[in-house]
Amino acid sequence: MTRLVDAGQTAVVLRRRVRAWLVVFIIGLVVSGLTAFPLETEVRVGLDVLRAWRAEQWAPGLVEWFARVEEGLTVTNDAYPFLAYGTDWLAFAHLVIAVAFWGPLRDPVRNVWVVDFGLIACAGVIPLALICAPIREIPWGWTLIDMSFGVFGAIPLLLVRRMIGRLAVLETPGPA
Image (cartoon, rainbow, N blue to C red; front, side, top):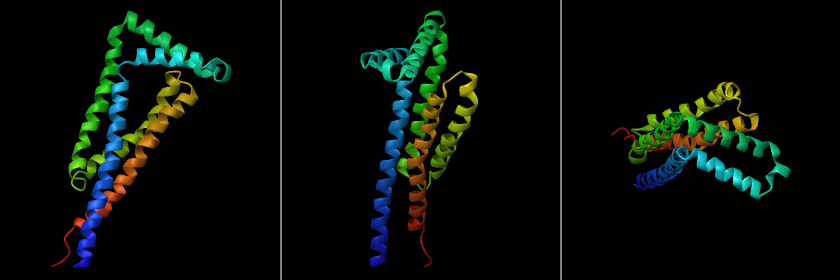
């Protein structure tokens, strides 16, 4: 009887941990999605902050990159505002993927496939950045930052995947 109670308590604790890590991941997706909408404003503010901190003195390459991105966004948005629609879809995709994680939030064992899907997507970030960034003339440092999203996104999902495996074992009824 004690073992069953311990297993039940362990399952409750594991479910709470799974949910907590999934909430962290979902928040990350939502924030990433929402910040993809106002790119021109965000880059302009970022450039203003860098200049206020006199970053030209200690990170001139970063300031140059932000200035180039700001110019590119401004010129493109002024002349071809419809191109930003692609970024709107990127933002929307992040929000939709975040919604998909509602399944494992509710029933982690049954919806573990969503976590696997997320891990595959995180792994895909690295080759995408390595292939597309040079084609798009993205600086190497920025490419590393982009790849870090895949790495840091995978960390909570790997923890969740492991906990769901343990949870599945605890919730599988034994022989009668």
